[in-house]
Length: 250
Ligand code: PGA
Image (cartoon, rainbow, N blue to C red; front, side, top):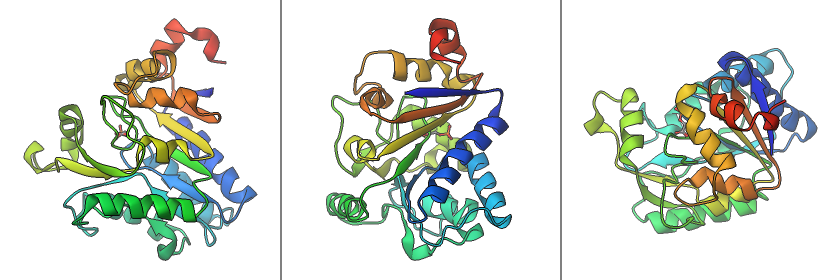
């Protein structure tokens, strides 16, 4: 694992966007595993800017997103399909038919999960998977659990996650209680992982994820077993690692 420390959110976004841009430049037909939440927004702004400047061509790129809320249609303004369209896809030249997000409206979530994993396999797996990290240590919507769920599946959201995500909804009651998420196995099958984190509220979970025991109670801790992980985080998010594991930072 390598950790890239940046002074602030803006630099975190630029550095992480640079890694995704390099992937697309080196392989035009890359499969990008993408993420939602507030942390990746600055990355997507950079990618849009560099595309407009003629530096990035997404015409051959495919994307697979981590997760989607259950029960929200793709045109609901809090669905992750809507988020991806508004914050990235409609501003770049990616073919909409190449963009994939789990179907939160699927009647049979188990079947949807199997289809989604088959789709990821048929694309040859993600070349790079972008991840945020939740306060619970979740990646995608894999919440603390008794085991690491391997495949794409339906999951009940942790109360902490519901509370954190209520900022995007009129009230906490409106936050969906379930989501479909890539499983830990699906995430770990990506060739490279790029995890981003910003802000002091992520400092403790970032430390526990990368320097604590590997346990499904801290889902992101499984990334310690992945051979190619890059963490790009700002100093606030790295404050506990800087205090307890300073030699891990350059
Ligand atoms: P955030 O979410 O980027 O909005 O903090 C991260 C996550 O829940 O994975």
